[in-house]
Length: 197
Image 1 (cartoon, helix red, strand yellow):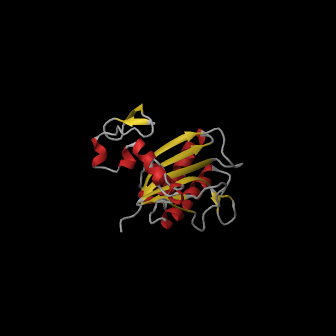
Image 2: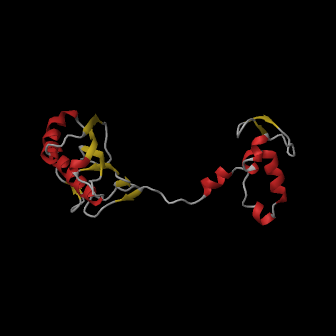
Image 3: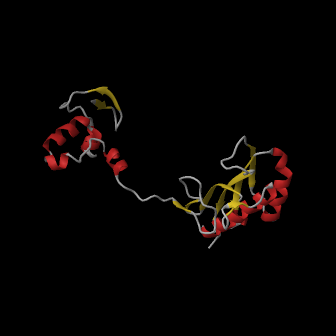
């Protein structure tokens, strides 16, 4: 066991039963401040209660089931995720959309063999996902683009501007060696905020 030094700081061993817990215990819960007092208290508790009792209440708090503030979902009319995830995560007015390829949700196949067609399809899918989260392409804050070939940069940009219009969110373009499915030339993910009520 460790002895408290001041409030809740433990720095040297004490034996069970040692009552060197300092004056803080008088005005706070001694079970939370003094290990030796907590041990004695545990011995006095009924067996049925002691079985579910911890010397450290924070451990009990971590074990309680708490509802997540994060909403995750995959809206209809968007590509089916290829792994254990949803496309969209939302907390308050913040929205994240995970990596998305240019797959046409109506057919389950790529929208085309070229980077322009795939770029347009990704942004069409993003528009549907954002609408389901109370947002749109004008409320995108940042886009990551992962390109198989940096030589496709200009063609991707042309299709990107066609879909995004005058909105220019922050953006990062990264060349990658490989993407998960054959024929995929790029994927994108983004962050956004919801529209004002």
